[in-house]
Amino acid sequence: MAKAKVTFSDVNVTVNVPVGTRIIELSEAVGSYIAYNCREGDCGVCLFEVIKGQENLSPVSKEESSVILTRFQEIMDGWRTTKSLDALQEKMQRENFIGKHCRLACQTQVFGDVVVAPL
Ligand code: FES
Image (cartoon, rainbow, N blue to C red; front, top):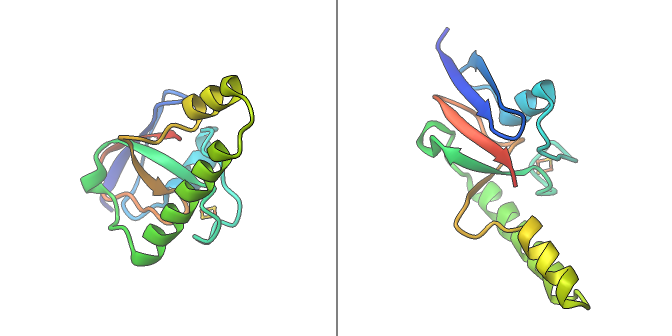
C-alpha cells in the first residue's frame, strides 16, 4: 500500500501513513494541537494550516469551502466585537490566517508528503 509522510510542525512529529488517511486521525494520535469538534465537516473547528504539500491533499469540496468561509467569518466577527486594542491585537496574532492555506482536518485526506500545523 502506498504511503505518505505527514509532519506535524507544532509537535515536531513525522508519521508514515497509508494514502487516504484523514489528517484528524493522525493529529489526535501524535498529540498535535489541531482542535476538533464534530468530526463531520460541519463546525469548522478543525481548521489547520498546510505549510507544505497542499497539492498532495484531497481536493477542497464545495461543502468544505463553505464551512471554511463561515469559520473565517466567525473569527473576524470575534475581532470586530473585541473591546480593547490589546485584546484585539492578541486575538489577531493568535488567530491569524492571512496568507495561510487552510483546510479542515476531518475532511482532508493525504495522498503524498505534507507539513501541517494548527491554525
Ligand atoms: S471537526 Fe467539525 S468540521 Fe472538522
